Image (tube, rainbow, N blue to C red; front, top):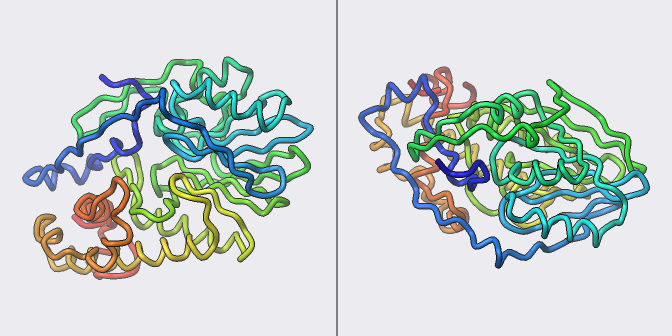
Length: 323
């Protein structure tokens, strides 16, 4: 079994109810190479107000620094913890107070234990603690992800929303259900006008929809629509992966996924098999621009196809999972 700090790219598996219907066409396990952590450089980018973004390997880290201490969003992989702590010390000498996990995946929670041992209180959605507390099975790569050690688990959890009043800002956090996973949270720094989207927004590459742990294409799109309604043209958006974005970049990613979803839903409504849907190449118009990341067209097609709601597949359009 691999350490829990595995790459997000591994977290692709079939939803239990749908897996049985697709046994004849199992997904092809992607080939993953873990990064050489000794060569990873943590880069700091000033965003706005008290907020910075740390870029390394794994999910982008958000940081609020001020008189009240450090509020950190996600923490990448455990081996990077010394480098992350060094980068935080360059931002502020104030104590590390909170680490907020946007979801349960190891490239966003791998540093929980070392940062908790450095004094941080870990906070996340209820489902993040539930997922991390027990083994998870990633069917696409036939791999168990072991439960996290107790020290790495969120200590404070919430169900719908929570607000932190720190560093002169009002940090509003809200849950978006069944999007990238079943435990996604969006963090909005209201004064700084910064949003951390976690993996509900991948800037410039195809997204990951982890339908094995409650993610869905409809929920993913709904999460993006909620964010679009929250931000304005001046808002800086920290994506889960990729460069710092804004409302226009989020809208572009949203519109692409809606078109892909609707094309796949139409084919699913025609009772096309997964192989037939892939052969139809519903992502073709976007592949040159969006397949530069890990997620390649066939993988995206499979994730969308397997996470469609029955109502959407039946209508071939707007709402609602293909059987």
